[in-house]
Image (spheres, helix red, strand yellow):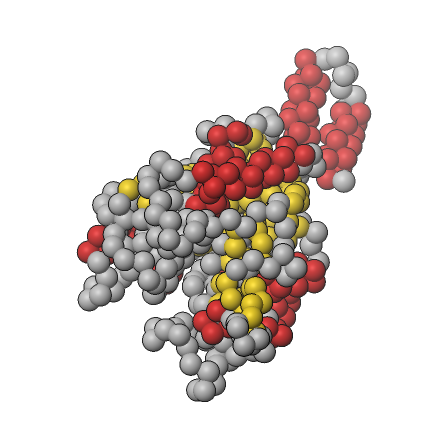
Amino acid sequence: MQSHFVRCSILRRLAMKKVSVFSPKSIVILAVLAIVLSLVSSPVFALQAGTAKIDITPKKPVKMSGYGARKGLSTGVHDPLSARVIIFKNSGKRLVLISSDLLGYYGGTAEYMRKAILNEFQLKPCELFLCAIHTHAGPTLTIDKENGHPNNLEYTRQLKGKLIKLIRKGLSNFEPVQIGAGIGYSPVGINRRQLVFDNSGNSSIRLGRNPYGPTDKEVLVVKMTNNSGKAIAALVDYATHATCLGGKNLTISGDVIGLAEQFVEKILGEDVIAAAFAGASGNIDPWYRVLPKFNTEPGWIPEPVLLGTMLGEEAVHTFRNIDKLSGGGDIATAFSALELPGKSPNEPKIKKDAPTSRFNVTAARVGDIAFIGLSGEVLTEIGMAIKAASPYKHTFVITHCNGAHGYLPPEHLYIEGGYEISSSPFAPKAAGMVVKEAVKMLHEL
């Protein structure tokens, strides 16, 4: 409409002044008209993005995270750890998505990192997704000077600087982009809440394999290209623990999700950033885990590599099949800090330093692609419920995001018990409150 008005206005002036369309003056005017029309007819707020990747592999032996019974420091590196960022910008609004090959930001480290990042780049809390892939073969983050290992304290301080450097690099290479989303399916994850019976016939839920339990098999992928059609980045969201290596392992690794990231980048090109995120996988494990008494060594981990390759292959396949891309997506963000009800006094927590009842929900939308960040170890039924109630076809449920506030099980599982229930700091009704808030935020974006 605006371009039509400009065109008619200039042509009307030419007619009123009786200027020949073949005169030098008219040629100049028409050239100016062509430039104006090209500017007016192009999108006023084109979507832009910047990407970056930085190595975060520990340089010294460190205490490893994920298994409380694990003893000793790391003895080597099987595969490197990275942090990746994808930053969207449109019409003055920004969205920063960070994927890091870590267990999570526990023990106050989420607030420590987020405060530094928000202040450095003048971001709003709703504009930052600080996430971990939940590998159980990475370093423990700590800011506890009394109890933290010196190497881990040093690593955590250095990580803060690296994340700031990462974002600064991403902000320096903005370019117009087009994005689209697709859904694939992978069998890598399996429900781990297995029903077992003792010799007396008493039943209980143990960590194992439950092929009949709910499992979210969806591999959600965002494809990002520049205006020339060259691939820039892939966002991958899948629900599984990264626990192939088990508690005896002392080698640093991104495990199944980190290895999937590396595979996607290798296939799509080393200059493509593949940022993976952990979906709602509190009760989902990879279908293979190293046997508890098996000691892994650097250079030998075929099963995690296999599962990472399987997940990566499906991500690449889904990426290549996405053919509907858009460059005009607007950005909307929201943040909610919930205070969830905790367990009653007769429901003891298994750790003295169990998380509080706080729970962060971060929502964002880029065009018609939605993201929900949850600051806990969310069981898969909750993620599936959010996706089912979302008004968007593609809703990325991302856990271990902007905090690490513990297991969040659905209410109906409390009667069954099991590890996730005994570990959770939350009352049974807490999960329903999170689902309600997340869906509400999605509808309001």
